[in-house]
Each structure stands twice: as C-alpha cells, then as structure tokens.
Image (cartoon, rainbow, N blue to C red; front, top):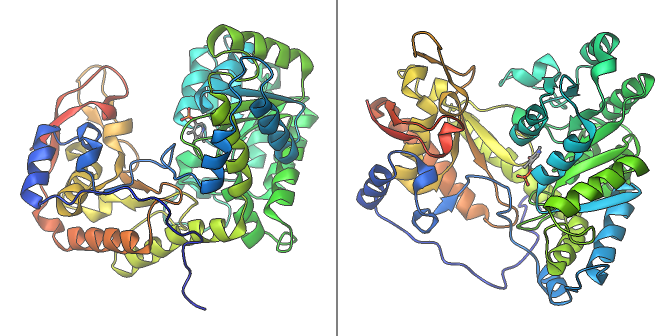
Length: 456
Ligand SMILES: *Cc1c(COP(=O)(O)O)cnc(C)c1O
C-alpha cells in the first residue's frame, strides 16, 4: 500500500478550538506579536516544540497505575533502571526531572573554570550549563551541517579532523567530550554510526570520557538503519545498543524519545563520578531512586523507552517531516534539507525576501501562520540569536532566519499536517503583504520568550 497510516488509533480525545481570523488578530495584538504569550487554548495546532508535548499510550497510562511511590528503592525505579540498562548499557542510572538537570549535575561534578567541552553542536541548555561552570562549549559539526540547502545523509556528524586538531592542542583542558544525537540545533540531523565510532576512538586516544546527549536516540537509530550500509537488517534496539557501546555515559531528556511529558536521566560507568553525581542529586533533585520524579513517571518512562523503538512508529514519525518538506519544496518554499527527525525548518529570509533581518522575517512568519491558520511555530533567527552592538546599540542579525515547526509525538494526524501545509502555502502566496516587526520591549537575556513587538 502506498498510504502510510498513523500506527495507532484514538481512545481518548482532546478538543482543539477553532477561532476566526479577526479573533486571532486580536490575540496576537494582546500577545505583543509574540506567540509565546498566547494562551494555548487559542492555538489550533501547536508546533512550538516536541519537548514533553507527546501523547502517552494506553500501556503507559496502565503502567502509571502501578507506580510505586515509596521514597527509597521503589519497584518503579528498578523497572526504569533495568530498561535504561538494557538499551544504554551503563552501570549507573540516575533519574532527574528533565534533561537540563542531568546536564547541570554532570557538568557540576566534572567541569571546572577554564575547561572546554567539544560537541557536534551543543543544545542551548547544554551550552548554558557548560558556561555556568565557567567552561567553554565548542561546536565542531561538519561544514555541511551549517548549509541549509546542502543534502547530506548525516548532517549532524562531528568534523573528525577538527576534533583531532582541537584535542591535539587542548586535550588537557577537556575533562569530557560529547556528541548530540540527533543534532537538535542543526535541524534534528542524524549522526552516523561510523561517526560515533570514530569520535569515540579520538576521545579514547586522549583518554577523554565520552558522553552522548541522547534525547532523540531512537530517531537517530532509525536514520542509521535507513541510510547507513550494514544496518538495514538490524533492529532499532541493536543499533541503539551499538551507539551507546562507544560512549562512557549519556544525558537524556525523556521529554523527547522517552515518550513522556516530564523526566530525564544521567547514566555512566564511572563509579567515582556517579557517587559525586548522586550526592548532588540528593542535594537538589531528590533521593537517588526518584530524582525529582514520581514513581508513576518512572514507570511511564520505562514503557515509553521501549515504544519509541517500534519501527512502524519511527517510520510514521520520520515520514511525516519528510512529507511536509516535500509539499513545501513543491510550492517553492525553502526549507532545511533533508528534513530531520522532529521538525521542519522554513527559511524565512527567502520567504520574505522584501524584509530585512532587522525587521525579524522569522517572527513575521510565525505571526502570519498564527493569523492565517491558528498554527504556532517558533522563530530561530535574529529575535532568538541576534545581538546588539555594544557601542551603537544597533541590532546585529543572526546568520539564519528560520521558523521551526516541531512535531509533538503521536498527537497530530495526516489531516492536521495537510491543513498546516495548506496554511503555509496560502501564507506564502500572500507574502508581499506581510509587514515587518520591531521590538518595543525586551528582557536582558533569552529575549525571544517574553519580548514585546509591534508592526514597523
Ligand atoms: C531538550 C534537549 C535538552 C534539554 O532537555 P530538557 O528536558 O528540556 O531540560 C538537551 N539536549 C538536547 C539535544 C535537547 O533536545
């Protein structure tokens, strides 16, 4: 059959509210042209993020009923721990309330002032937690990973020559090295098995412990199965186990490929570091067998980690992004190619070629998509990453003006995506009438979350 269907059926529904264009205009005005400030009930289709927004299965809800809320040593913890050990294979498994808590704890015990941490590309919170410890986060993704229209099967790969060069010079200041699968900040692009293996070999050569930021490990494993020779007939579990076998530990946000709404963990083989990490955990997150989560959360995660590896699910998930990408390209709309695992990124600079970066074309597109169809995306451009000249106060634009539409797991169906595609194409046809935006108020950092804007 040519038609690919959602590999699930609906047992419970949540209504979404239709609004009129005049109503949405009003909501947008009240939110100062920043959709982060719009109430979720007034959003029809929410593509703000894939983090913690997924739908749990009947099996996960059933598992939650068996949650053991004992303070120490609960049955839920042991079910969670044995699942993580089966997939990731590390000796110590430390639950946390989300991914950034795992990062804070790992870097808090492993880094000191002046250290450096290489990665393909650090995710925002990873970078922030490295920098919070007065260390430097160094991005070494392959050059192809930075060119939106460049087609490459593994655009998230580490630049191995650059890594080797970097470590030859700085290895004494590198207490740990990382790789992020898939490379979120580079558009959800995968990393090949060969690249993980070689990255590991280089870190080993310099005796540097290797940690995987594995938030989307199953999506990455699926890309390896589809695109890398020798993995066609391996299961997602086998591929995942091999990926993790090359590293010494991992940090995880369970809000992504854990298929739950909250949670994370840190895992590692090093006994000393694990001891220090657990001490820190007790200080700030909770006891070692729950780490800021309820027993029922750990049970939902134990089931979610298995469900995310189902191939029919991954096929539907990866194909959804690919499908939207194909339709947008056919309509002449530029996107990051090829589409990655969890989102589609639209190039707003070419979408609104009449608007200069100082008028925030990405944010304009985010606002227009909401106005036209009640869809919420997020700007990844000069509003998020632009800087101000220290002397003149003038805006220095970001290198790219992108809009990310990130897909919650198992939440939306084909017709939701068809509706979204139609909305984007209609917005494109009307592109010449779009007006630029300016900032009227902004906080001192992370301004995109709360900035207030107005039409130019
Ligand atoms: C989401 C994410 C994190 C942080 O996880 P939170 O659960 O949001 O704290 C870290 N790294 C990557 C690659 C992510 O996508």
